[in-house]
Image 1 (cartoon, rainbow, N blue to C red):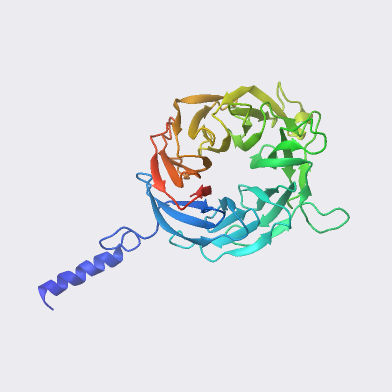
Image 2: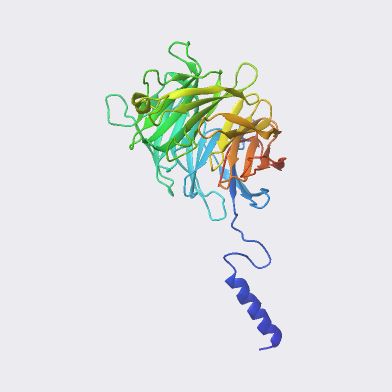
Length: 406
């Protein structure tokens, strides 16, 4: 064997040994981070899911593909299961489930559920363990689906239809607008929060926040208490809600807080509520049993139409995107009080008409989908101060809407 041939064989061998980390002459094909963006196209056509890889050094995005199609109307919300192996997409007409391929693209969709005729789905969230999906519709109704991490299976569960043992939607007396779930260790329970904009029963209590405890089988029990659910928000037209636990072990240095983004009369605001999780000066045992909420401070200004919120992995910083003013706001959360303090640079511009937020699990990168601009704004975040960088802009297919990242 010639000397040149021997050298070539050695190089090939070294390349093969490093294949799990590198490909010879190029980076690995497996993305280090993933962003999924729903796109609604133009004039109600072009409903797809776009997959992007995230460069975890810069936050830059590279399009993997936009080949995953969505059934049943305009797509509005997407969530990943805890394993990152399955994506669930909510459209106005139903839910599609997709396996996630090794390159980050989505596989063939399954369509396990469609919205009843005449109804429209509005929003979806899941619990932390990936056991349940919660969906609100215009009917108005609240659905609970049992899921299994790593699987595309989806089964309607929760409360039974009256007079039967068959699960069905929980009918609501208010038009829901947003929802958020949180799992607590003290007390040990799953809680679901639902905001509503219009009371169909009386029209006197239009802007509310409802509280439900989720049973192990997905049944929902509203914590009506005295006073209790539903709670009146202090600003009108609630558009978004997010429950945050600043101390999962208890309330010694933190608490459980619920943030409600509302449109308001002219400028939007964030309402803050604190949940009673231990007996103290503000909460008796009955309040803990009823998951009572107490209003905290005064609403915090956050631009017009704060439509989405996300918190960093340490539950220290809250980020809010406002559709009406094309802005991303950042706040530091006081761990014991839940009050919000604007960051040193309190807000940065996004593209036109941002409608959703997604944060990578490292807490270093944050993205907004800008519906009218058909692009994505990307921000680099400081994990110590929460500071937001000047955004990058990445073109997306037309009409981006819901998004999620891992």
